[in-house]
Length: 480
Image (cartoon, rainbow, N blue to C red; front, top):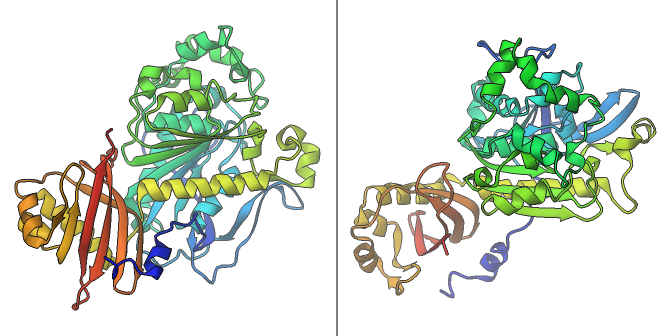
């Protein structure tokens, strides 16, 4: 044991915060859909998508701005336009990004560029009828659940894309969104919208800022109340309303990160309790547009194992891009933060939290020789092959299993595992190598993309042939 835990090995056991390893590239796609699609009366019949991605090290990054080129309103990170995609690893995880109501994909750049620098391909879509690049539509602002379909469609398109598709790991997909984009996270995670629940809340004494029309669409509440009447003469609207209270869960999305998520009252406690994937939420305590109590905290209280971080004194629009002097002059409502609030610092902290969250929940790409340890373990366990399992261990290896005495040595390990096995999916969330020793920390589940049943730590030693063997296998379940 003393041989394994060298000073260098102990040093790498301390997991650092997310660190940037890549330059960020940025590109745009106009995904056209060759089948009927609810465009929500938008002018553009395409899913215009901004993509940030890990770029080649020779890429030249430049500032991204929103607004007139000579007088921009917002700064949204730095990225290299149409730079070459980084060549390693072979595949990257994909994160879908969903902007706030009336905003646009590019506004998510402060998050997308950071995710790209951490090794993620981040794709932000302009939601039809609800983005600031073209005229707003009533359908775009009221058929909230259609946004989930936009994200699922972008996944399809990204996986088929000639540049990015083969470089995306389809088993490592997540999503993040702000405001109405945060609502969209709850939808794709399995929450179900009930307009009636939202309407009842807004007629109750508990009604708060979420019941007010957004400044982008001051007539929204009247339009919202007219939906059922309008649907009588509008087949597309009628079809969408029929699907309102259905699940829009996309099983390919394994974890979601919601920033100041809106419309908490539109979800029932019973539906939120059924959400099966990890959810992390951030919000500001001074948010008057989407008050924490009725949305972010409500979600966190009722979604299993959801985590909530509330930034003290932070308002809703802090999660938009960083304002320029011109932005503060022309868009004071969007740019006037409370004294002492550093918008860019909040962005950095939120983006690092998102990167760390996805690192843990989606797992990381292991070097091939370490990945083999997990794939061989899965194969032997699924085959109920105790001898093959024991063969993955060092001759003096250990199994440290909850509720059982310590098991040592290959023969004892083979006996211990005899008769055990079945479906098993392992994913790594951290690893390190120091000379001839290393470790893998991860989680396990019964089915791919299903909730974790537990977590594990494998300590490893390289044998004379260069093959990594398990020195100790420690696991414990998530059920108390």
